[in-house]
Amino acid sequence: MKVCINNPNALLLVKLGECSIGVDCVLFHGDDSIVLEMNEERVVIGDIQSHQLLRVNDEDMNVIQHNVILDLSNEGERWEGDVLQNKPFGWGVLYDSENRMVYEGFRIGGVNVCYGTQYYSDIQKVEYEGEWCEGKRWGRGVQHDRKGAVQYDGEWVKDEHAEKRVVLSEENQLLHNQVEVLIVKDNSCNGTEWKVLDFSFMPRLRKLEIGDNCFEKVEKVKLNGLNELERVEIGYRSLRQEDMLDSSFEMKDCEKVKELIIGYESLTYFTDITIKNVPSLEKIDMEGSCFYWSSLELKGCDSNGVSSLDLLKLQSLVFGSEAFGGCEKAVFESLLCSCFLNNRPSGTARDGVWNGCLHV
Image: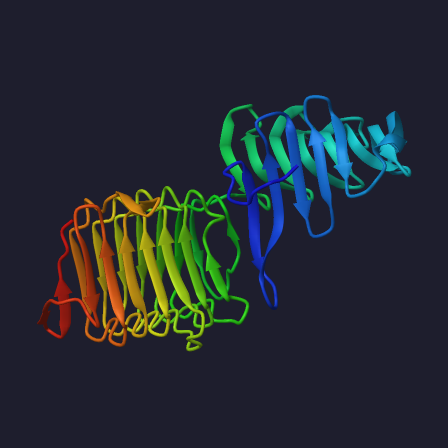
């Protein structure tokens, strides 16, 4: 089974390592009854409908014992179900010391995995039914109160509701791929672990707001294929990697994006910017010294070398003083209007800000 991390059916948590951004845990539920859990230690695949484990790393699934009653403690806790090496290993039912059902579902050792139902043991009613990863509620799940009413029906990450709005800071550098609004606080994410800022694993992202003095070590920014993205705003002096050899900013194939706003002296040393196939784009606003050494390409969608999707909604370009100050060329290309401008687009200066307006 191949799982793409930008698949909306996959719920993953991203964490930072010393040298890279890595995936902490992935929970994927396909269109059928198959659930996949993947983390640093193991890969588990289970079939909810048949109650069978299909894979746990390289374990031989044929040696699993079924319909076993396994005593777990001297107090009377027990497991009834699949067992391997005298431990829970597959689908079954967990009972407490008073013979009350606590959990039914997939379990490996003492950890709930993939999918299962947790009960209020004293009243034998469902507390939670849904997906699990490493013993925590993770993925799609429904929580009930003690009277059976639904308290929450949605996505979970590490036993918490998966918030659609996430604020990234020095204290919190964990992300999940169901985020719709991502806000990066000022002076955050400046470590060497942030080299490539690729948002392709966030297919539901609608708004990206990066504060001042952030991501100073990032060399590449990729905003590609984000079909829900509507607005991007980058603050003052962010993304200022001074290694100019291969630094780039891309925003491509984002059909709903309307605004791109970049603050003063952000992305100054980036050498390449490409904005392509963004048919809803209305406004580009770049303050002073943005992309000083970069050339600019602003294009419709290419099809066999011909622009087939124009930037019909683009209303204005606003460039601050010294934005693209050292560039060699700027290309604005569409089916209705194509122009090549050497050194700098023409326009008028107002209050130290270059203002130009392109209608296509």
